Length: 484
Image 1 (cartoon, rainbow, N blue to C red):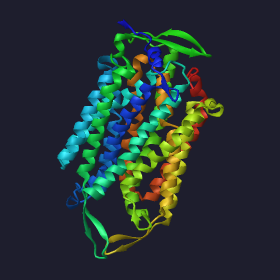
Image 2: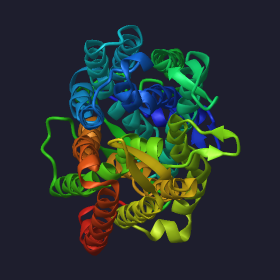
Image 3: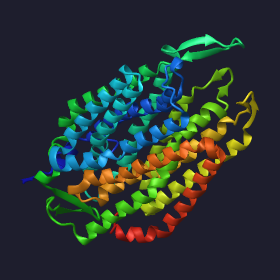
Image 4: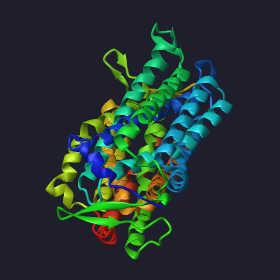
């Protein structure tokens, strides 16, 4: 075993940007480009699968495509528990991030170059494996830039989350331009209106590959300078020494090696991670409808016309991240305020679930506005729902997400013993694995049960679950032993 020097003290000597170490912004930009890659691909995935062959799609039935989407986005969040464990014990976080980034780059290249069902399967498999190495380890590195008890950690994750969503905001815009404009084939319908005959989806995947490559070049060029040796070695080879902030004074803390048994307090804190994970499954199952059932519903039943411009369906994937980028600084400030600092993590998360449910109630109102008729055995939409229903839904979903996702990332780094940090980050992401598969099955039933039934059921259920979580929040706070 080797003793770790006080690297954080040396990082602090490098100076800060807006009160945070420069290494945070390196991780910010690395994650920004990785999320550009992922959300660029995600924005077109369901559309690519369901469009006709002549439209450069794969002509997969909508129900099947929703299941494929659900299983893909689910396993993207299952593999992090494996990638986190491998990083903790064998290769370190930095190597894992590089391996993951290169693997995801190759996955996007396969989707670009092989436009078949086989190419889809290979490309998605590579993305699943690569994300398992990348995702938990970059989040863990954010937490390791700060001392135990440092109140700035919550706001750091809000800033980091802005990077995630800035990439998620830009990607659908770039991809929509490539797929629907630059590389699309256009014609004129019987009414003389210009329409898209075939889409340039493969170039959307190419843009995602380029984004992934840029992120990896930035990370590998600057990690040594701004992270020093943080994340270079697997945790089992390090005897950690940290300085904990307690009532504005510093206390040196020696964390046991990876082979030491967990204390009773550590076990209770780990239990809270698992309990919160179980609750949050249902938040993500509803939230991830944005990429499946809500995308398909928007494509067919939402009036996307503003003046003479028809907004591409893909562009609506940018609405949520745009709200995140706009609202994250407000939330970062609020969590540090007197009122925000009094709120425990379980309370914040229960509010997030309730807000998600409220958002779905607006989608339920949208379904009441839609009017259809059957002409020649085919559904014809007579009246579509107003665009504002969708925007308000995304607004409430975004506020809910800000109460859950960055807060959750932060609290896992606080609750998890350092020797299990990346693996338990993977456990947290396991909620999204289960949620996306569940969400895929929910989306697949939209055509059978109707959108109104689905939106009402999701909204009502998550509101009730949020109220249950609020009731048990005090007990969970006790088990966290002082962690907010």
